[in-house]
Length: 268
Image 1 (cartoon, rainbow, N blue to C red):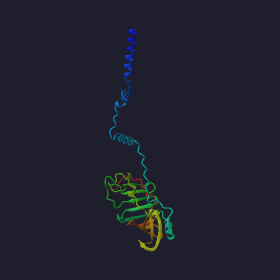
Image 2: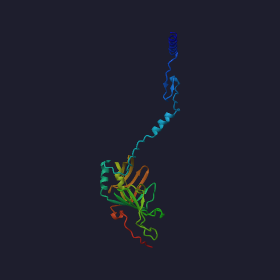
Image 3: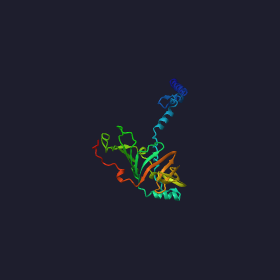
Image 4: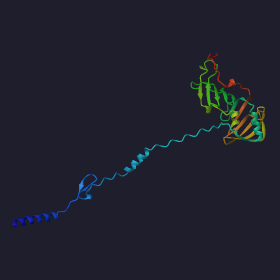
């Protein structure tokens, strides 16, 4: 009996001690560490200041840039104006010029007043014989320029038959079209958008000319037009004077406007 009482007392003591021991709970942190208190988990380090901004900037910089807009087409200031706003008397002068197929002249303008160069022109082509050109350099030994107004190209040739001047009289020298060409009397008529005769007239190299106030490319000018043939003889435009001197009409052959195949046998 005493032995049973001792066993019962021992069991009671064990149960009492178990009741006094607290239950321990564990927590698993994001890095896998087990701790008794969540506050003991190590906090994740915050990214350095500015790191997020840098990443955004890098992302933005990798975006493809939009395609550049194509450049607008170049304005052709020599384009023909078909719908002209001109008075009846100016329209008659322009109609007279329709009978002129080609012209030959010397050319003057106040920015470059040499007049000896010879010009032969139709509405599509022109030849310039460079009388005043300083002859000759290794890079540009040409003495004649052929202009094609339709193709918008200029080609130089050395055509002189003088001994030793032109070693190859058929060699092409491509030139800058915009620099080589001029506005012929036909081009001035083409670009005219407005025109009004003033009633004034004068003699120019024996020709009767009528004064016309005109507009081209949105800018005003003054032109003296041959009263019989209708072609411009003198123009003042944007402060520059242009003159077609020693002008002959319908005096140019088609062969005058193209480079012939020349022999390289030179005269002495």
